[in-house]
Length: 566
Image 1 (cartoon, rainbow, N blue to C red):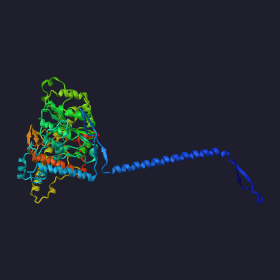
Image 2 (spheres, rainbow, N blue to C red):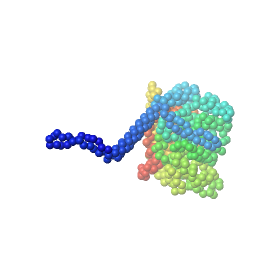
Image 3 (cartoon, rainbow, N blue to C red):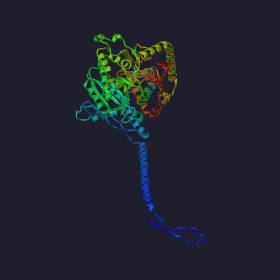
Image 4 (cartoon, rainbow, N blue to C red):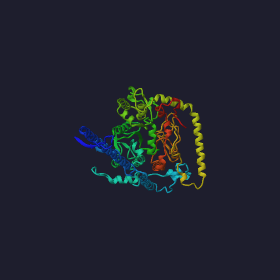
């Protein structure tokens, strides 16, 4: 192909303009290559624009969901499918500030209505605050101590009528939720992301069980109640109501749950196995009895468990050989025996390891023939690392040696400090009583919201006071203003001031047939503290990182470990 062109050619005269032509035949292939390149670049540009728009859209919707007060996160909850089968699938909404206030206000109204309904013959609203601060007059203390509860009265229990097995007990559930504050949504996302598990052994007093469950209940947690098979049918029916009304509560029956009998261990392990095999993301487990009450809110427990960082918290005591009786005398224990309370704290990994261990099964078979085998459980299973490795476990022999040394070397000094503290507290109470026109707000328990509790001992699972206090038991506190049953204190109205300040997670034990005003006051205090979400958010609980097993897990040197902190 040739194209005519006029191209100026230099000429000496400057008058000649030569006509020539240009051959473009050689440019054809180049043209096609340029067009192809431009097409590729155009496609790449379109692809880039599409990707950019997709990213912008994703970021926009993510931001919209993050700031929407109605955004929903999936959470599993129990739903019975058939015999022995459970699955978990609810949806729980995380609330923003306004909705959280509305949630708490609704629970607060139920709480206040319940207390007004139950405690109508205790007209002064400030009695619990005065009890919590040790400001009760002798006359008021006597009046509260003599106040009683008729647990069988319809005034206290929801009207549970006979239900057709094929029907849902909507009426019973409605009455239960009307009388007891059971939250339907978690207060914080932190609690949602760190669900807890409870194994609870019960056999009597449905009112007390309902009160306990409402104090520890959260919809993201998992609960297993083991009910004594010998309990009366009405009690079983009322416990089944909990399972019918709440998808994350499971109720089972166990044979012969009796003090110091193996049925106690059977009930605990049946629930432990159920929780271990459950399709649920719970993180930490604790055992409760039906006569316990929590000393911590759910958020406080979550943050304390995070401080434990996978370690077990259990009591460590030598096992008395006098407990080896009958045919057990001729048997050898698969593991070295250690004594401990049945109340312990352990992670999901620990529980899974215990349930899947053949050695643990052998140990349980051995314990069937012993006396009070429940007191030879956790210390034995978790305290023998050379015989059985358990995640989060400990060397009971080493720790008991350290505990023994620390106890007796500093016992005199600690007693002196305790006497000084008690004298100072007594003087302060007398001073407070003399102050007139004390405002209601000044009667509320005062504590540092970030660090309201001071550690006392290495054992925080349960606070229990024994008549003949053993300095090695993990409880240096021997005062009991209630009464002793089976050498264990049943707390009364004079104990509440100390209980609400204790660092332990659970108080054992309180009875509704003994100074029930103490029970209702502690129950009220825990609920109200949980509903004060702004103060709750400030709770840190860093002192729990100082527990000896937690420090050992971090690699702290031996001379930094402490078992008593008073």
